Image (cartoon, rainbow, N blue to C red):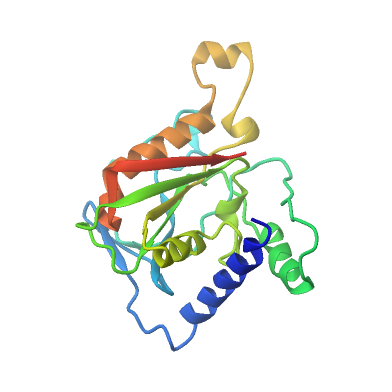
Length: 235
């Protein structure tokens, strides 16, 4: 794995270069969710939709410290071209293996620092092969990172799903990749007798479950098969 990591990081940087260059002349990809058109980003051989809300904003009014409320329907078109903010959390550090080249360290270091934090953070990122259609019925991989940090990361990131999908395309096993952002620390995992009595514990897990329900409802629009979903939870 240590041998493969520099290669994967190089591929991520290469795909970012190609997506931003005249070599990639594909139109911005779109999907239809309910009655809304959602515009994503064309990147190498994949399409990306970033920062799609899967629940109503949880930071205001009666929604704060409550289970996630599903979005009734998408009825206004929007762009999903940038990562949503990361959920508030304790300071986290990225475990970087020793012996990496200086260029790789320079590439990784900004990933942890350039992060926007907000309570309005219940979003998913979806990456699919560029040729995927609702008829493709591709396997779906849901990535749940234990610290939630990755959702606020930049495109040049070791958590960039385009790396995963591009590599699986090369292996002739394409998938649709979904990354979940959810509430953490005190916002997502309150612990007290009062919390237990009111039934608002484990909100972070409830966020994850709501995101999975979102996948069941909408992933077909991106080319994924809602009956063939695998979840990977990394702590």
